[in-house]
Length: 279
Image 1 (tube, rainbow, N blue to C red):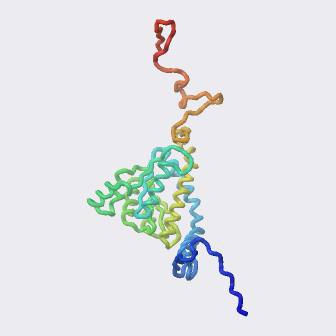
Image 2 (image 1 turned 180 degrees about the vertical axis):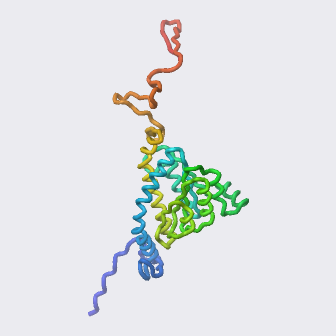
Image 3 (image 1 turned 30 degrees about the vertical axis):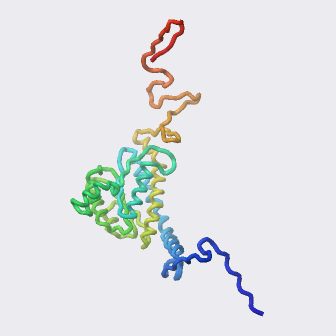
């Protein structure tokens, strides 16, 4: 009697007949023969444990950034390649919004200034494409955030030196330290992974967490700067506050009540005994 064959495992998405099996990577955190996805997730998991220590730094940065932006400061950001996309993601969250509606915050991605970028590169060399913009746009007490997986990009290191010379606070998102960019900046969030893809993925997480802290601190920062943030409606339009009885209240102390008509009112008699108003 022939021995019974073992039951075949159930197929899952990606393992149906005729589909190519995933390529296997070399030995890594997931072990020899791990699939591309398993190897990538293992590398990401290995970096997550030390990454948890970034919480305190991101909270401090978020508070400082909120206060500087509320006081009229600006965030300048730059990166190359994938880090340029990460940097632009950050400015979009600040000028737009992360979750809840709020006033727009001033943030510029220097690499997105393509005409300035190419003109500077052509006339002064690629190492100057960010530094010259920092000298043009940066003001004392602005913040400069530079993103690099290697931390060795010469144009970002030059930008950090230009920022410090101009009185900006310089921060960096990098891969493992030590690296030249971290040495050139006041503060650095360094991802402990040799894999640049993992570094960029955790830079994106850092972007979202940083913006979350900015949003949490912003109301207090605006109040400390003597500013208030108006309520906004679903379409992003400013809506006036309303009183307990539902009557619209003036948005600013001393402003006229909108229920009172302003201007000149003229009452006309049209000859029929009826009166009409114009004004």
